[in-house]
Length: 294
Image (cartoon, rainbow, N blue to C red; front, side, top):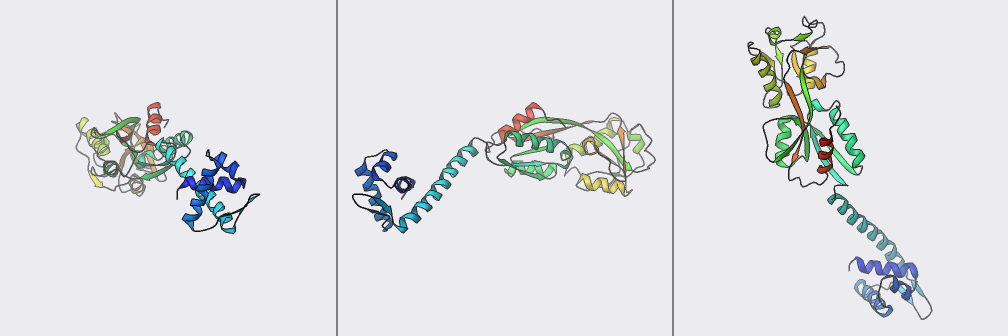
């Protein structure tokens, strides 16, 4: 049995007339009658009562009509959804992002994507840049917002934002009055920063800032993985931290934020495989090319 037989029977069940049902099925009435008889033999069930004057559904036929309509509706929906997924207009897009992008960049990107692809579900995954790199390589993410790292030939990389460093210090710290901090100002300060194994571009930017000023290397006292944890440790007066400006756009309890003199630039990018199998990725890349306000 296939869907054609179901459609033929639905035509008969809705018209209760072999000639009109055959016309709807684009076949002759004798051929149509044979198809219905073949269906009854295949099911070993009598579906219709017929004589020279009228056609009526048996109780089994009435139930089969109801179920056939339901099966055909779901089959048609499955075909439609398959086409929409193939066109990138339906389905799921797995988007990874680092915490630094969670304040404004990812919400704005997600909002704009939902406007152009309302039937694609965004599966958002907040993680670290190091984990993003691994998950993109394994195909566990379709795209990701992260720091620009070493060149990856297999990835499409689009610039979203140029971020800068800010100095996060405990509220009322001796450096609070500075207009802009220098590496020399931090010579005696314990520094809190994520390790290079978690976010290499940020760690390299911090160490490079000290090196370009010919200052003593930074003294890393604590190395948590997540920026929110870093800010809480700063608020607890366990050290100071050089963090992306993008996470300092709102007041942080217990933390003051100071500008950084000659801050290095940190490029935040959208990355996706060049040969992305998920067609829902293309509209996201198109939005990134247009520019995303942050």
